[in-house]
Structures are given as structure tokens and as C-alpha cells.
Length: 570
Image (cartoon, rainbow, N blue to C red; front, side, top):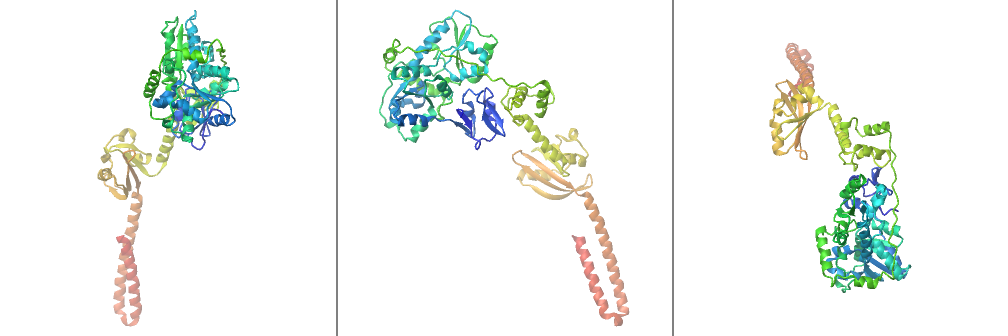
């Protein structure tokens, strides 16, 4: 299992993760987001942005519990950004970790000195190359998987976390279990690749574990960490990893860059030779480690976190490195600081011109003007998206303008083909749109009616009533005197859109047929009355002969007359 995946149950196919991923490592398959492992650099941006919390991060707490339950000697290596989370209780973290079962807990800043010394050598190299720091695993992963031509620019030195883990295993033995605890998801892959970090926990995992064990840190005793170097504790703040080098006026210019977008821009600039004779401190996360993907969502912003880190660093008793050398004397604990980087880039299949054009057409991009390059799908251009479709990394439906046009065209088609007259009227009683039935009925077109007041075609009083009262008028029969038409109209208020929808049927022909039928019925009634009158005269003359029969005839004819009268009245 990769270090993160999406829950099928929770994923709502919103494309938020695909849009935010800086390396297009999210593919949508069957309307479900999936991580493309060979492209993913585990920066965690998708994890942060997911509104449905559909991202599942592989937790390694169970591994640490297994180590402890088996009786292994487990030592925690803590990233210095812990003070940003625990604040005033930072001096109790060591005792808290021991309560969880750790044999010991140390700050990872023990590895910073050796790393900085290696960086300083590169900062003074007699060449014009641009070198990139290697402490951020998302940056090293980005270069290996997406910019392998810049591997030569990566300083081939292990990170402080790996360096500290090597020191621990050198001092306490290879059998000791080293658990790195920090603010970064991508440290998980660095831990696996290093061979010296046995397990990596994020601060989120640690806090969840603490809450599960129902430990109240306020009740614990203060137990300070052994290292008292305040300057090294500022390492998670942007600029601090290279500050000591910059203060020594190295041969190369030192530049600090933070955030995924700026890091990628910088790599592209280096690729085309814009930077020379430079040391670049690259932090993929905004605010560096203080904005890491493994930091908890605790409503503490990065500026507050920075203050907490500085306050904790300033609370230390001294600023020397003497106690570091006492714990890990370099003459006794010499370790290999070198690291090898590999090209991990997986090239995409490139469609030919005909295939590319067919994919673009399927996305509604028929001409160059249709290629909006809006980026709503997560790709910079429509053609990049088309290449992703060709590689089964994206679906055509990920194109927002395409889906919007498709939905609008479908809706317009339905409205246009309906025999009912449909017209949209805004709050100013101006016409917004008519369907084809309406245009034909009023003998107009969009160039003539759009934006005109509805009173030019219909009585505006019913519209005013609906607008003022927010009450709909349903199936009202009216006569349009100007065009001699009879219609059944309904006027609906659409609250969400703040417009009125007029729907009507032309019943003029039906009315004329009904009128003719009524005239025939009246004629029949008049004929019936004449028959009755005539019958009565005859009845008087032959009353003695036809008595009862005449009376019955009169009753029957009167019933017929009454029925016809009722129909006429209706």
C-alpha cells in the first residue's frame, strides 16, 4: 500500500485534489480519485484540500506499539517543529514519550551540524553551479521524479533526520528502533529509503495516539531534552537552515524559496540556466516545516507557530554545541553523510497530432480558441490534459468549461424543443431569454427581444405581483388583445436565480373550436325550443287524443334543453 490513498466511499469526485496537485499525481478513474505512485512526492496538498476527508494516510502507530510490546529499545527522534504544537508544554514532551513506552527521546537537531558543514563546503565550491539543499524530501522527490536533469544540482547529503538516526544506531546499536516524529508526510518515504529510520510518525499520528491513551500532558513532569542549542531549534523556520552559512559570506549567493509554486518556478529557471553560483534553500511547503502536511489542524496559524518555536528556543540556558559533542563525539561516531539520487521519472506516452486533435475534440476543443487553458482540471493547458487522457490519468469530464457547456447545451436543447413557450424575466421586468416557441409566438428573435421590457409583449402586472409577493401564478387563462391570442400562463419566481420563469400554452385554436361547438349547441337548443313550442300547440288541439304522451314528450325535451343550457353556461 502507498503512503496515502482515497476512500471510495467518501470521494465525491469534486476534483479538488486533482486541481491542487503540483505534479499531476492524481488520476480520476470511474469518477474516483487515485494516487499515481510513480508521480507522487507525498507533499500532502491533496490531503489538506480534500473537503470530504477522503484521503486515508497510512498510520504507523501500530508498528511502534509492536516494537514496544516486543521489548525493543525504541528511541524517538523529534523534529524541532514540535514546539510549534506543544508550546508551553514542550518541556514535557520527553516525559510524555517515555510514558507511551519509548526508551528515550531526542531532538533531531543533533544531525543539523554535520549537514550544515556539508552545505557550507558546497557554498564555497570553486564553480559556477547552482546547488539545492536536500533536507526537504518533497523537493528531492520532485527533482528525482519530475526534474531528473537537476539531480546534479542536488547536494548529495543526507537530511538531519537521517543523520540523527545514523548517530543513534551507531551509538546504541543496529537493533535499536528509531522512530522519527515530525511535521512531514514525505518523511515516511525518506525513512523507508534511508534504511536507518525504522518508522515515521507525523505529529497528527502522535496526537491521535496521545488522545487514545487519554494522557494529559499538563499532569506530566518537566523533563528537558539534552541539547541546549537554541539556534538549531529554529531550523523549521524559513531561512534558518542556511542562515549560519549566509552569515559567513560564502562564495555562492544564498537564496531561500518556500512553497510548491515558487519551488517549481525556481527549478524551471535553473533548468534553463537562469541561476549560477547559488545555494538554494528549497522548502516545498509554505512556511517550510511549520506548514507541513503532518501538522495538526489546531487553529494555530503558521505565524503563531513560529513565535512558539522562537520562544522555546530562547528559553534554553545556553547556545553552545558542547553538549552535542558530549553525546555524539564526532571522533567516535563518524558516519557517512553521502546520499545517492536516482532518476525516477516515468515518461508519458505522447499522442500523435491526429490522436491529440481527436482527444481535444472529445473535450469540446474544436479550434484553438476553444482551448481556454483555465487550469480547473489541474493541468496547465488543455493539451497537457489531453496527454493525461491519452495516458489514462484523467477523464474527459474533468474539464469544467466542457461540462458546463454540455449541461447548458442539454438544458437549452430541452427548453428549445418543448412545445411550451418559455421566457425568463429578470427583477427589472426585462426579458433575459425566450425559447424558440416563444420567439415564434411573438414573431421575434434574440436580437430584437433581449433586454427589452416584458410589457412590450405581455401585461406586466402579473409579473409585478409575483416579484413583490414571491408567490407563483399557476395556469391563469388570459386574452392577449394586441395579437388576438388566448393563452394559459404560469409565472414562477426562482429564488436562487432571482428571475421569473414564464411558461405558457397557446390555446387560441382550441378556444375557436370550442366557440364553434358552443354555437352549434345554442342552435340545437333553439331548435329544441321551437320543437317544444310546436309540440305544445299540437298538444292543445289533440289534447283529448294524446294527453299523457304529450306531457311525457314535453318533459323529455325540457330535460334536453336544460342540459344544453348548462353546457353553454359552462
